[in-house]
Length: 439
Image (tube, rainbow, N blue to C red; front, side, top):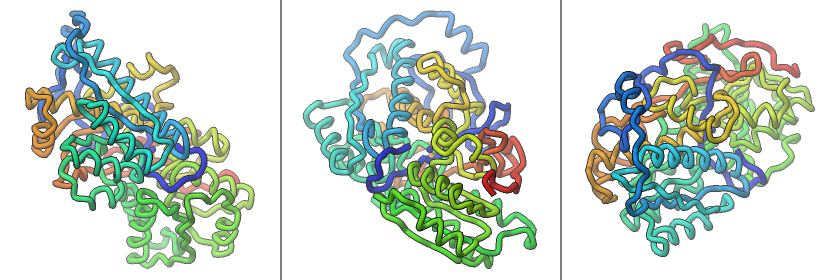
């Protein structure tokens, strides 16, 4: 699930995590341990057993000596998406360290070439054009956000490159109908809104909200999430009393919050990215506007940045959605968590899910190379459209347009931590309806 100065929109993020509890994450998770092979297993192949992993890890692989496998990546290291861009960079670099420590891929070391797109759609187009035509990289991985993924994927498709991407899952990404694109999360981003709607509509009729408000960032990731909820709520009889699509350059959210407060909705469903989510919470606190339920598409799902930006005392009760948790038993997840902490420090519940998404892109490429026995982009594209592929993000498969076929989780801030609360099959705790801290 991550931005600085407001620029045009972002995407996904989608994502977050709960406390370290031993819960299997439903259908999106494949139980397994970390692999110590130089390449991941082929599609639908289960992770190795703990005993096999331990035995394999006792043998130190030789350092890779072949020709480097160069992977080009454009990331938002400055500008609006810099928080999430930095998180993605950490995930990619963690994978690079892990795979090279195992001897590379077929004896060839992985070398990342990461360039800054300054959160600009124009710059991301230039970056991938240069990475492919001038630097002649072997593969490319995706940037952060649907806004940047859309033009970047088009460049990759033009040159026949597989486009494995961690954080661009808005509807417009898949409406391009690009056969080379693979979104490495369990579900398209609209699933984030659906899981919240499912929870609210599971409540007894007399306990559901009667009215709702929808502040929405003009962004191909954020707005569709709120709109998904609005459509389901209105169909269930929950009246819309406020809706506002605000531009990406919005800096002062006081007028928006004032209007929402006057409308007095029971629930607020905010189609946000990070900076606008922080701004909305700050304005709500200032104006003492506290709806009974508060959901953010993005921003509130950052376990490290959200409490830092809005105040640790202001987070409890707020909902968001997740695609990954650090305690998941999915394939190679614990390998990722351990390697990330060794490289960057901190604690597991502070890892941004964007880092896990980026690491999973690398795992997926390893698997595709192992499956095809080839470094040919065309063969890898065709292989990924077949079967199911285990990653730290769960067992993934895609439709013809690169949209994944799974679902997300609802999370809520409880006692200062992000906790999985819905659906019950993956929940670490039950959702609570509690007054927001500033109520």
